[in-house]
Each structure stands twice: as structure tokens, then as C-alpha cells.
Image: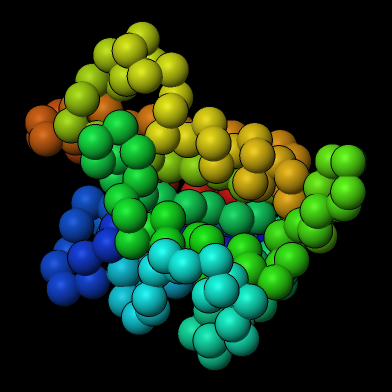
Length: 190
């Protein structure tokens, strides 16, 4: 049985957005196929953005420690977020920054590559956008996900890190295809 941590990272906890629908669909299909699911909603996390360097060394809040434990306990991590202005929403990034504090994901060594703390896990990044995915790949070259896949998850030891880009989600047919694609990923526990 594969333990999967799903981070639904749409920043608005007050409404049901398409990212919520995708996270629930992935969770349902993965659970039906033997996965043990820990679904978390990052939009409901309450925190202050780390706007001053001193905040990095503050103690980790209980809510963030719980997220760290969920990730540490998983064999596979899924992060689902919308692309806004060519990147992830600011609150999503702020929560991920808090999760990574205190050498949780990796520690830096003087004049060397980071030492990974989460090796032996895989990850899937799923992003949604109204832009057609081919336009995103052509004009932005994966800008919303590449910084997360390589220098964050990769340094932490996640391997492989795969990305799924779901474009044109403002169109009903594209939403239907996107939902089917995510359900298939859930069934494969991928």
C-alpha cells in the first residue's frame, strides 16, 4: 500500500475550485486502488509570509509541523495548484516556504550541493491554467513548475518528479479531459 500526501494548493479555502475537484478525484481513485491518502488543503493554512530573514528561524507552527509530518510519512507527494501570472499563487509559495524551514527538506552544506532529507519518495506536480498548455510550454517553458521540481523537490531527494500541465480549463471539454487525466493518475498511484 502506497502512502500518498496530496497538497491541494489553491489559496482560496472558501469555495470549491477546480484544484479541489482534481485533488478529491485523485484521492478517490488512488484510495480505490490501494493508496493510503492524506489530503491537505493549503488554502486553509493560517500563517504570516516570511518577509524578514529573522522569521526563517522562528519555531515551526503546529499546522506546518503537521504538513511536514504528512510529507515525511508519504512515499509519493502530489501538489496541485493553479498558475496565476505565470507562477503559483503567493500564498501557496508562502506555505511551501514554511514547510521547508529548519532543514526539513534538505540542508545546505558549505560549497556543496544540498543534502537531501526526503530521498526515496516520488512527486507529481499538477498545475491548472486557462492558457492552452502548448502556449504555456512554448512561451513560459515550464516556469511555474521547473523551480519547484528541480531546486526544491529535487534537492530534497524526490525522484522522479513529474509534472502534469492542464491548460484551457475554462472550457468544459478541457475540464472533462483534465479530470479524466487526473483520475487515471490516481488509479496508477502516479
